Length: 342
Length: 162
Image (cartoon, rainbow over all chains, first blue to last red):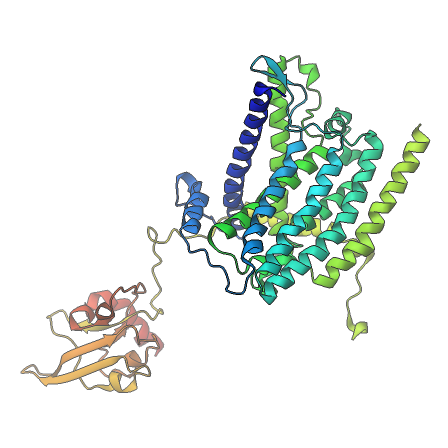
């Protein structure tokens, strides 16, 4: 790779970082707004126009707080955990393609994804299972019983749901015949989205994604009522902000991945018939991808404020007795259909 | 215990239809009228039954009703009221030379209002008390005396309901 190539790669990374971090800030705002609307309230409306600057005020306040480290904590791991969380959450977005055709930049064609690797699906699964390290290390390093319990719960929960997540994806991979995200999206041309072809797989993947991102109804690792704050009880200031950021970044990653794998990614049905220029087409595709991701993000928050938290045994029962067999059945069903179609 | 459990139907056991129903409810709520009151700009006016800060009633001729009998001070469960009596040439003969209510102690029970034989101490509709210094929280006579026109509604309410 020459200097321009490196520059372009760096540029893409910087743009992705900026977009994700700004989206996280506004996601916090929308989380509060949506919860307010559901509860017949107005929500934040004082800081900036319609309260849009509220998250920045919150972050400023958070950064001015003292960074407390418990005396008995393992200082190195205590500092490492939030960094692990946030870097893994952001890294998974690197393989998600946001448009169909390459863009010309600095006189060369640039693919609309940071890393177009052949095993994109595997990469995403691998990173999402790494995500558990951040929470577990954080819980353990704090040397606090609540934190430890939160960390333990998160590892048990994420490992259980990892399985059904991977198995749901096998259906998609069987249909497409590729692990590359770009090809999976290309295969969903028109209305042949994977949500239509794989309804069971979509539901199991969606539920597993909720569990992987620790969102309600599966936010047991941080269940406030039982565990104070769970794994981040002993965190404050910047480190807490990083954990918070990681939670929302995970949500963005999960939404982008669901949009890519099941909702057709950047595909816009009937776009080629409109006869637009290449530039306009790419813009439409990026817009479609962002809209689908945004819709999924709204769905995540809508669910959070609608459904109460599962009990721990219910969570495990659902994971092993319902999700796992359903995902397996989905594979068998897909295999049979593929066999008869061909 | 198990036989008392409500048996779920098949559709309910699938969870997903029920979850969708729940989410439809929350979605409907999003478009309902908002109940928020924009507080500092838009203030709530309490009804006459409201027990706000106790105040001393000032008659139209500029004399307070209080005759400094000390009953309010005696009945106050939080010991918030301090009265010191003195003589006056007025027909009521006695008046409070010194009258203090410590708003950090007051529990808004309204016993003082209830026990007062002269209807001189009344619970007003004031409900905003935020203090930065202890001295600000102790209301002296100058802060307590309120023209009778301000508490007219509460006085009418008390006559009707008591």
